[in-house]
Image (cartoon, rainbow, N blue to C red; front, side, top):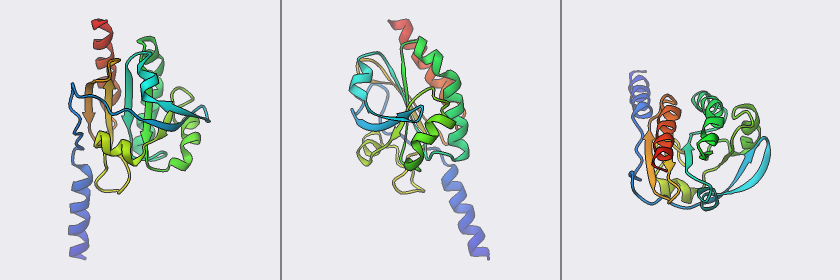
Length: 177
């Protein structure tokens, strides 16, 4: 029993540890194309095409329909219109529960923005692997400037701060023109 408690405590601490994203501000964002859904309808999302319109808010989350990811999706949905007014494209990517992305795009993203599949290449390129769950992504948000460089990164297990941080970064880019 003591071994179980020690193992559980160690696992809990590891899961609560801050995530790490290798891509630094100023680095070139890896381009990707993926299957996504918005309002329950599937489409192909291409970062390169989205950047032609303006900055991109790209957030990775562990899995659709988990508690923290649902909270985060609701917060991004509430802010979606403001990102749009600032000329930014918003998209969430996950590798967890990808069979439910269409449903998640309707229920939790409230038809406001797309969610897509984080492929192994994209996970590796952005260095957003969730160490505790092979093949899943950690919770990391990026703002990618129109020129394709990373303007902002927040890698934090809690959903708190991801919307406010990315919004501030998008507003700063808008002021630069």
